[in-house]
Length: 33
Length: 578
Image (cartoon, rainbow over all chains, first blue to last red; front, side, top):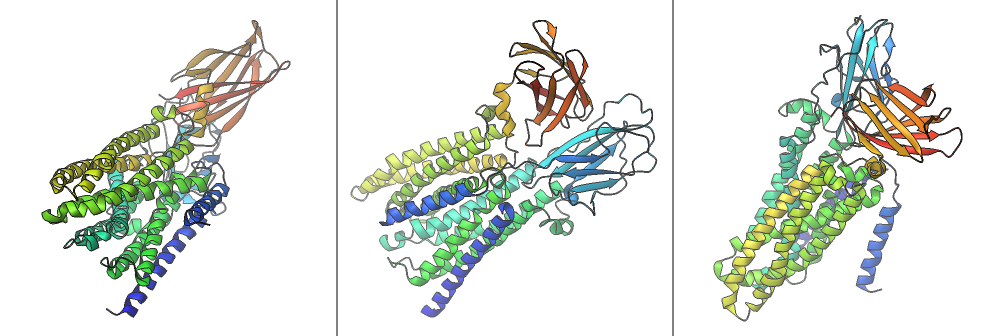
């Protein structure tokens, strides 16, 4: 497995984490906003 | 600024932001207007019943039952929302209802998923006769049904263990591979993936059962239930929990895939993937608070922060315990002691901090949810808290044995290998016991979060002059030199009751006073009702109203302004309907 693929996958994981945070922040806004 | 200083400053900012979040009182759904009005005697039979709530109640989860004295159901179609007012629910009735009394009994689901219910009567006249004793329809509170509790327990356990095992594998046990030749974390990785897969099934199963209970459908009627998932705030939050958990699983899979534990320092790719997975995990653990009591308890920012900290620390503790047991079972016997002596000291430090945070956040949340100390043993919610505290205290004692005895023995085993096996056996016993106790505490938490928190009005219990009922009331209390005789008849829920107050001072009736009576439900957060009492004879003030809309403890607060002298209040607790 090349370093580039590992880096690309990990950036994908980071983006997934940001998406999860965004989902919860939207839920937070609709719940207590 | 040092690293510690920056951490403290960041934490302070988070706490300040949380405290600055809007604070208000949040109640369960309650009625603000009804057609027909409670106790009304109508000349013309109504064609429908309309109930207006303080919030938009979902009709697919609401029940409005209209029955006659024989218990016959008189509605002709399901409940629907009024086209002109989203807060109003309407149910059509059979035409030409004959003369007589009728009971309207309703149940609705509040935004935090709790059922609330109440009832009142009306009559079709002109001569409906005496009001009969109605049988309350069996629309029981269902948030604590056994299948629902088990599903909730499995869901909480699987989510917490999956996240905790991932944290254990990537943050605590990672150096094991480098320091102990031939040791592997494969079993922990496989277990984390398996539990995460269980959680991805457990969340929709719980949502399905909760939706089926709330909408009174079979849990197997999936095609009818799925469209209802996103109808309530509670359902939307659990759909988001499933989405966040799936995102966490994807990010965690990448993080485990790119991880190279043999290298001491993580690569940029490993750090990115780990940060993504931890951010998703943090998001997952915020959702239960948003779907439950925390988001409905003022101040909401602080309440959500405490709930999140509680779940994070609980997940780290529980996941770490399960991780240690898996390591104990999976490490080759010859490397078990060496492997545990790497992981146990690191886990003990994390567990110690987790327990402190768990305690602090638990105490904070209890202070926010429990309005008065005796609610801890007088309400189901308080008893569930006490059981949870008991289980966690026992688990902490076992944890203390690990910290004070097992950890030093495992450290000493590096030089005296004969001590190692005994320490490892003790560790297995204490960690197994701790895991069982924490798992039971999660069940207590599942029950706790299914029960409605005590009403804030319970704080007034200590100020009550007397506790009266059930049944007809004729009680005498004394306040500010006045003698007050309280009469409640028949003191029955969901029916008009007569409330009278006979006031004297020095044996003379207290005429010409201004008296208002406020009703406050003490067992559930609801809106208050206030009535002006009229003086029917010198010193006797009365009013008849169907104010006790449900069985339970009611706070009756009399505000009395005498013609001469200072105003005063009298608070009495009335148990209606047993």
